[in-house]
Length: 339
Image (cartoon, rainbow, N blue to C red; front, top):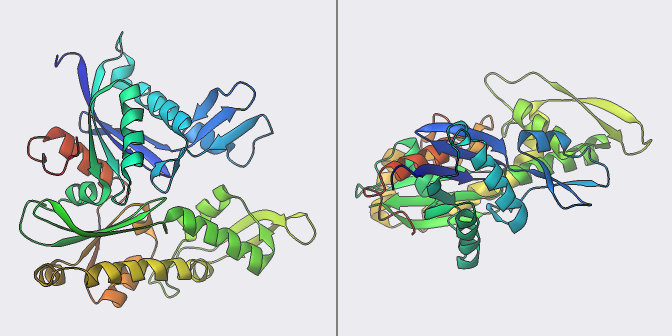
């Protein structure tokens, strides 16, 4: 059967979906779908649908099928997964669609029902063997931590929908915390800040751009990014207008949400068994996920926890890389994969 099965690893994220096939990231696209309201057909997915976001007329709606890391719109997510798998160049050339062996990563705070939704979605797109893996576990493997050792490691994965905090030892999660404060909430904070401070109404895409280009969580950075000009609609006059925004303002906007992430990390640390706390004191905390790219986050968390903070090499792909490694060595990672 080896001829007709293909192995793929999927990181189904709230913001981005990544797929690994043959040890390479072959798909990295925004988790967004554009649907024609009259026919209910999917017109575009990924980057193409992302370009439409906030610019559609009444016959087109853009939906994000995943909310807080779990499937919120079953139909749209299935069509999105299906199209993304079909867009993999090597599978694209085959005459028939091969059956798939998949490993998909899921948030650690997921319920049984939500798990089943992910599994069923995978089975409908020709998944014959479907394994699930918890996100912090995948992130730890992707960062390069040896999870089999009797040694505690703390991983914080700040994604689009959830922040996953887990202490891992002996290839299991000892204590974990999953909070719904992550990239999407940061984007919302920036929108609210622009409204209240500058009377400027901006959309999600612009807020996302601000977060990437000048996003920061502390005001005194060693090499701050340049100020950015932001265009939107003036709430008082209704005219289009432009304001200049700096990283210090973004730091103010994100402050409350970052405090909640800090509290969650402190909470997880306070639940950690003493022997593992001793290990974490020596190894520090590892950051993964897109949120880890916020300027100054490592410094701020380090001040809060008094521990060294390491940002993964490629935080955006750490989770999918770990999922790919688990897929390649399913026998070795038997204990962490959920069948």
